[in-house]
Structure formats: C-alpha cells, structure tokens
Image 1: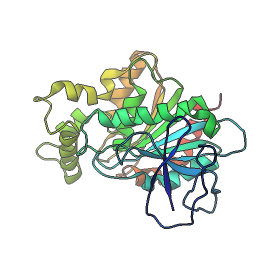
Image 2 (image 1 turned 90 degrees about the horizontal axis):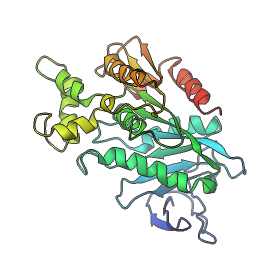
Image 3 (image 1 turned 120 degrees about the vertical axis):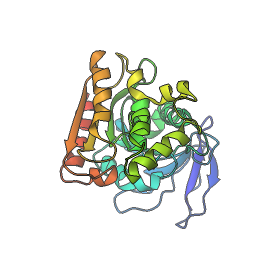
Image 4 (image 1 turned 90 degrees about the vertical axis):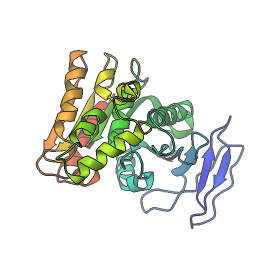
Length: 299
C-alpha cells in the first residue's frame, strides 16, 4: 500500500491510500519508513508521499537517498490551468532529477476551485518550508534548492521566486511555458482569440476567485509576478514555444522587471506551438534546463 506521512515532531504516519502495491514497512521510532510505488531505478527506501497540510491536495512525493550524502533539492510543480493536473504526471521529470543526484520534491497544491489565489503560492511555500525543516531526514541541503514549474505551475514557481524579499535557500526558478502575467492572459483571451487563449482567460478568473481585474484589482495584482520583483529574488529561466498560447513576451515582462532590480533571467524561445510538458520533451529542451539547474545548484 502507498502511504502518506504527516509531519509531526518526528513525521508520523497519517493516511493510507488505497492504491495497489506491496505492504509497506512499519515505521520505527516514529520515523517513517517509505513505501513507494516500485520503480526500476528507485529503491523502496528512497520515495514516499508526505503531507504538508490537512487538505487532501497538500501532498508531496519526496525522492531521496539514505547514503548520508547531503544533496541539493529540486521541487517540481505540475500544471493544469490551476484547476487540474496532478503530481503523478510529473513522475518522469522527478525521476530524471533524482537520477542526476538530487533530492526531489514533487508537489500537489490546492486547485483554484478549492481555494482561490494566493492558496497555490502559499502551498508551494509551505511545502518548501516543511521539507527544509526536516532536511536532515532527507539528507537535503536546506540552503540549496531550485524549482521547476510547468504552465500554471510555472506561474506558481515564479510567484514563489518573487515572494517577499527572496525565499531563503532558493537558487533558481525554471518555468516551462509559465503564465507569469495572468492579466496579460486575461486580455489575450478576449474577442478574436483562439480556444486555448479563451480557456486560459476563464482559468485566470477562477484563480482570482471568480472576479475579473476590475472587480478585485488587489487579487490580480498579487497574481501578477512582474509586479513583485525585488533585488533578493532568485534568478530565473523561462522556456516558451515561439507561437504557443502563452507567448514569450509574458516572460519578457518579468525579465525586464527582474533586470531592473539586478536579478538575472534567461528566456529560451523554441520554434513551434508546443506548450508545457510537450515543449519540455522537444529535442534539447530538457537537457538545457537540466544544465541551467545544475549550474545554479553547483555551489
């Protein structure tokens, strides 16, 4: 059975999920023994699902090694219009970074229909804070980690990257087709737009709690990543297709804002229309993103 462990003083077992699989080991001394879904490249002691809050969506899969070596971490944030998607679709991406030698944290978060913005950013921040508090359990360096988010997950990652005066330990943020400007997406989805642009416009309204930018401007300002750039923010990398419905100029807005306060940002535009995970699978994209993350976490 696959287990979900909640973090108390020593990370106590909390909820048993009904997915098929072998029986899990019994936790000893209050410290959970992971019981992952078996994979060819990950041993049963290296992967488990933990809770970082009470909501059913506040769960994260953590991949780590019990070899005593302290390693940097990569947090993975799925997409899905803020109202769908699941961490299970990020399993292969998570595995790829685990195989590169990192601790990997693949998170779920509350969806827009369950909780409006900024719940999604709050969940990402809470998952990070929870793992950092328990860094020794996962042989993780709490001051050396990066985020990679896809589409709506890219928006959440960028919002974390620009939160406050900088998030402790965060070395870099990658967005794959990130919606860094929901206001721009809202405007692009007006009359004459295509199906995906109209769908994204509706998704931004749901994210804002059902109101448009004129009805609740403070919420929309909070959602707008470029407005929150500050000198202590993490460097960023965005990847877009040149002709996708979340175009590169969204990231160009963020790049300008970050550069004005002295923070580096790179944008890569790939010919075509692919969005999010299909874009990541285009030749050379995953490799270039991995190289960027490796450089950010090298020291």
